[in-house]
Picture 1: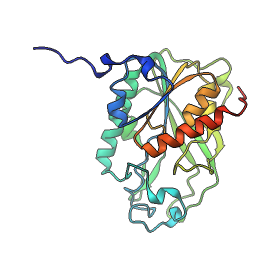
Picture 2: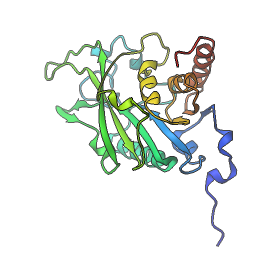
Picture 3: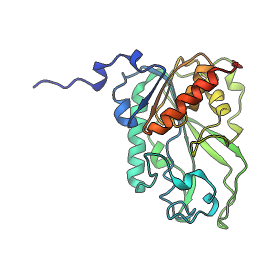
Length: 257
């Protein structure tokens, strides 16, 4: 019986470098060679419309009434059954872990929330993966109309890495609580602040950075500003075009690195 070759056997890594690849993240990652990526920085859709408490699911709005996310993502409805969502994210992390080198790392940004009155802390997603550290991204601003719990002001970045990963020289001087203002002037409904990704990438020695949920291209912008290569995967053609434009615009301005 003839064995099927891995999808990436037909591709060279150079075919992917500094490209925005439009497609499903799992299918596309399977085309990339194992242990070829230095660093993965990403934040998946949070499945916010599958919610019991914030009005996202039925359009009531609540604290989200003026938010772009009330209209959802392009090409992703963000409303999967929870078990299906967890399985999808674990599959994504498994594929990411295959891709990073033996000194590579994944910075996986997510958000804890209260669902049906109980904390949903994402352990069902990250359990079993080698989480070395949790970094708190404290966002400036926010509002909460739910009387059952205090105002959520942070998101969580899981540092998932292989044993040989080390930080760049001097980066360990940063604490594990980071405060950055949310990105406000961006057409994407849930963009990263550039300064947050600058902190992550500059804290590593990575030469090639992957973001499998590239969105509006912030990871690519930060990588190129710091002289690193990137690979971006994004399912939405609209967001791919937005990312290309933002990257082109950013490269016309002087770099601080």
